[in-house]
Image (cartoon, rainbow, N blue to C red; front, side, top):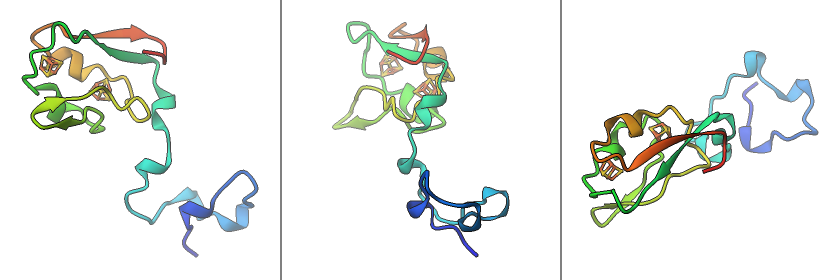
Length: 102
Ligand code: SF4
Ligand code: SF4
C-alpha cells in the first residue's frame, strides 16, 4: 500500500501509513512547514543588502526567493536556520538570531 500524503491527518490510523512512514509522492515539501524545526533564524538588514544574489543559490532549502533580479525576504515556513546564507553574505546583511521568530 502506498500512502497518499495529502490524506494523512491527526485522525489517520496506523493502517493508512506505510511501513517506516515512507513517502512515495513527490514535491511534498510545500505541504509541511518544516521551518518549525528551526532553532536559529536569519534576519535581513535591507540597508546593507547589495542584491548580489550570492545567498540565493546556496540555501539548501531554496528559502531565498528572488524576482526580477532582486532577492525577496526569506521563506520562513521552510527555512531551517542553518546559517549558510549568513556565512556567504559579504556585506553583513544577514544575521542569525536565536529562536524561531525573525
Ligand atoms: S548575499 Fe547578502 S548582499 Fe547579497 S543578496 Fe544576499 S543578503 Fe543581499
Ligand atoms: S538559514 Fe539556511 S535554510 Fe534558512 S534561508 Fe539561510 S541558508 Fe536557507
